Every structure is written in C-alpha cells, then in structure tokens.
Length: 185
Image 1 (tube, rainbow, N blue to C red):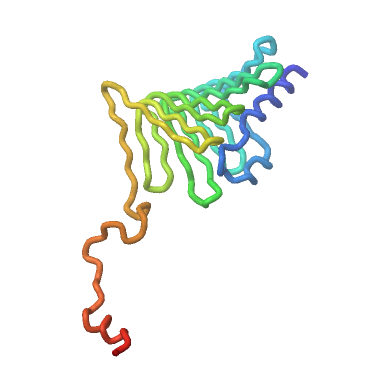
Image 2 (image 1 turned 180 degrees about the vertical axis):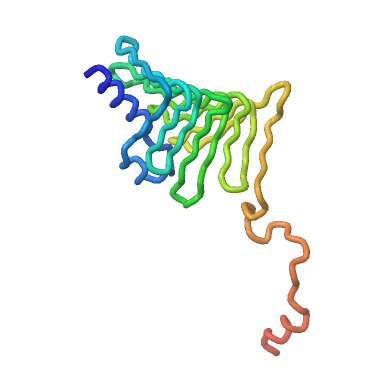
C-alpha cells in the first residue's frame, strides 16, 4: 500500500507544462529503471540507472530520478539527473519541445522547470543555452543565467521574425505598374 501511495504521488508530479498536449496526460505513466527504492516516511521515490518515463509524447531520460511529495501535496518535486538528463514533449502547436541539463527539476505546484548545468531548451531550430534556465509554464516566463565560463546563447531562425522585417533583396514593384493602377484625374 505504501508503494502505491508513492506511485500515485509520482504520477501527480507529471502534470503538464503549459501548452503541452493535453492528451498526453490522459495516458498511463510508465517508469522503467534498473533499480528503484522508496521511503514512505520522507515521501520520496528513487529510480536509478537507465531511467525512462513515458506518458504519451512526454519522454524523460535520466541516470537518476527522485520524486518528492509532502503529505499535504503543497510541495511536489521531480528531480532528474544525468549526463545529461533529457526531456521532450509534443506541444499544442505541433512542435517538439526538448530540454537537457545535468539536472532538470520540475515543481508541479508552481509549474516551474529549472535546468542546471549545461542547460539547453529548444523547439525546432530555436535554442537557448545557459548554465541555468528557468521556465515557468504558469506565467509563460523564461530566464537564463550564464556563468564565468559560459555566456547565454540564443539561436533563432529568421522565420521567427515578423514578416518583411529587414528583408534584403525583396522585389520592388515596377514603378510603371503602380502608376497604371492609380486613377487618372
């Protein structure tokens, strides 16, 4: 019975990030690992070595996963560690969001994802790299911090820019064609 309560708490930690495909969270949660252990008194559950969590399109891979939940569920946290730990999930816009870091911490109550240590967050060709990236899904806010050894890097493709913003080489209408369309006095 104690393990069942921990597994229920663990599944609650996998609630959606904002804009994640809602259908994912109607799917069963499957966790596999080489070893697992739980401590009901501290309300923790550990999965160790070759950890894989799958729920719909959500996929988390890590060397170790620790799930912690307080009895009143005011604090529910999932911490995945690895070299790197990885996360991916299909978003409502049809694009795959991917993240990786040495540590990925998700607080279910605040909907905050904190990636630390060679962190990277990407969707299609857009990427943010930093020592630490914090994404709050509830507030739709992102912040990134560099370190003495690593500045923040952001890469985005020009297609992400507004239309006609600084395009060079655009064809201009012939001067005669504009005058022909204007009514003559």
